[in-house]
Image 1 (cartoon, rainbow, N blue to C red):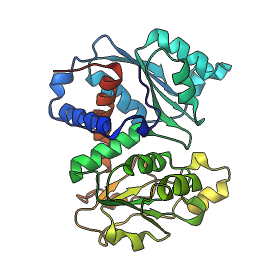
Image 2 (cartoon, rainbow, N blue to C red):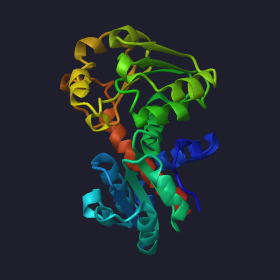
Image 3 (cartoon, one colour):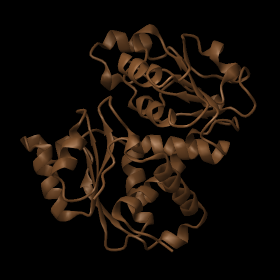
Length: 306
């Protein structure tokens, strides 16, 4: 039995197979429509979510399976003080696979150690968000045709952004990757990512504060929102929330084939005027998220479709 806690739980070869499966699902949805008949997915979301929870549910329904679960800690026995370990033991009696989001880092890992069914980390605090990373990889590979030889700009909240941390960890395994880290001083990438991941692996990167300075050299621009829920201080959030806004004028500085990605939800960081630009890929990215989660469910359940 396998779980997914981090993108690094899959080797590069396994990732390629997973992404190939997701592409096949995209092209041949009918082939997979009954693959999970009789199987149940539990979505245990201790934190609010729209895209991640609904895309997991859509993925399982598209595979012919069914879904049960809760969408906030308040609507579960966590409100009565039940531990994650006890909850997953109970969920294991009801479902075949579980997707768990939790505000505490490491909570899905604790669940996986007690679980009788595969557990997928659907986001734990500011730590990891592996299925968003799989979505990002599928989007880049599908639209760019490759995962290597890319200059990737990561912009916004690089300190608390779990999507950014997961994506860096996943992409450094491909050749020719270079990062441009775009953030204010207060939201710079944590030292454990800078030193233990980028520097330790000899990955070239630069840190800049102005988005305009980075735009001309980027193949991918990965925008992130400043996350109010990660701040202890309302004043700091208000001061930083509109630090970066991607506009039509800034897009004119970019390459003709640069892609703009965003894990969503956006607040103000991408102007709606950018939505009509063919390089804006963030809504297509959300669709790719369903395909990759379908592929992940099949892989962890060991279901092969011929």
